[in-house]
Length: 329
Ligand SMILES: Cc1cc2nc3c(=O)[nH]c(=O)nc-3n(C[C@H](O)[C@H](O)[C@H](O)COP(=O)(O)OP(=O)(O)OC[C@H]3O[C@@H](n4cnc5c(N)ncnc54)[C@H](O)[C@@H]3O)c2cc1C
Ligand code: SF4
Image (cartoon, rainbow, N blue to C red; front, top):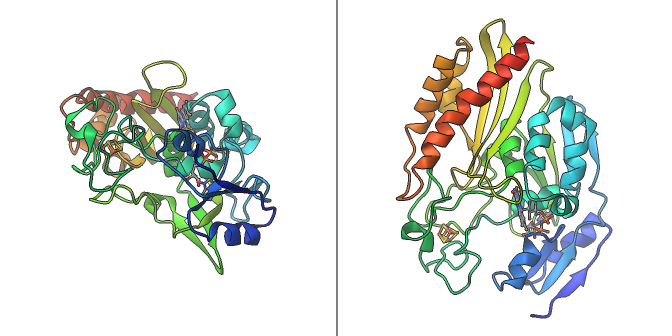
């Protein structure tokens, strides 16, 4: 075990000062970072625990949206009455992830910043560009049955592990952060960087930025949403493919539709091609399937994961049919 310092600030300014030194990192629930420290993948010199900062609240915003504090636990967000009422796909996505114990510890910001990873990443003896830039990607020609089918490059074929992030992509979230002397906002659609040839650079946050909160845009009461996760066992498993979907009908016409996949790319995949085809059209199985086909025509499966293309294609009509049916009842 390598020695490291531990700081427990109670004010944001103090946390920003404390993390500015060499090798310091913020600590949320520790369910990802401490795991990676144990396996030798990460070795921070100091941990700055953010859980004593006043950032755990969940509250309405003036425009009718919702603010999720950065240190609100995954369990508290999933159980919050307004999340369940207005953003049910977010509650369902969180509850589909990890386990009750992990969700009680994990924070909103930590969930978004958990490392995109695979088994090669977790083993310092294996090549992995994301962990050790320039060493290669063990999964590209190795074991990759649960890796990406969209938007990957030869540098990295991993998928983003977060369920919560897939639902946030659906609700046009914004991520708010502070650095010493500045504050900023990154729209969630641009929060994760494309893989390119620098997979170790995962987000658009400046160095040492402290996430302070995430806001969700307001939604109309008629927008129904749902999260469905396909995985290899019923709990404690990352998505094989997941889909967050939201649908608003005007009679039999689609007034609004939003779709985001998990488990298919290194970032939550908002299915804009499918959405464009669906918006304004009839809510029929034929159109749902055509939209899924159009989105998945861009898929580039690896040697052992072509099954994911069919899975993703089938999830779209299944979940949209459920939502349309719920809308008509
Ligand atoms: C066995 C197991 C199964 C799992 N299954 C799933 C699953 O099915 N679905 C899923 O979505 N997730 C799953 N997870 C991952 C889990 O959701 C994450 O580990 C958790 O959400 C991370 O949150 P945390 O607060 O513990 O983050 P930490 O481990 O504390 O931190 C993660 C990263 O975030 C940074 N950070 C934390 N807070 C801030 C802040 N406020 N500002 C800036 N940086 C910050 C840290 O420096 C670190 O880099 C699983 C984890 C385990 C161990
Ligand atoms: S897929 Fe990405 S995380 Fe996995 S070995 Fe390749 S570079 Fe590393």
